[in-house]
Image (cartoon, rainbow, N blue to C red; front, side):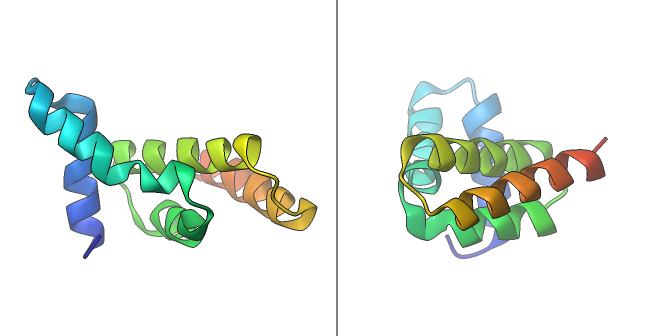
Length: 92
């Protein structure tokens, strides 16, 4: 992903597009955030820097999936949990 704005546009298409091909392309492009542990810092960056609801939803759901699907070290799981809780408190 080249920029936060591009990611926000892809998230918008993922959740709002009526075009199945466009939505499938967005889903395939964004899948890496929920399946690849190397994208955890990018998810944290999105939570810290985006104000777009669909981008925030992608980042938080991806982090949640990372915590539940992978054997992450305890300290990393705790850090992610704290980040998600803090993010939800800030967006209330």
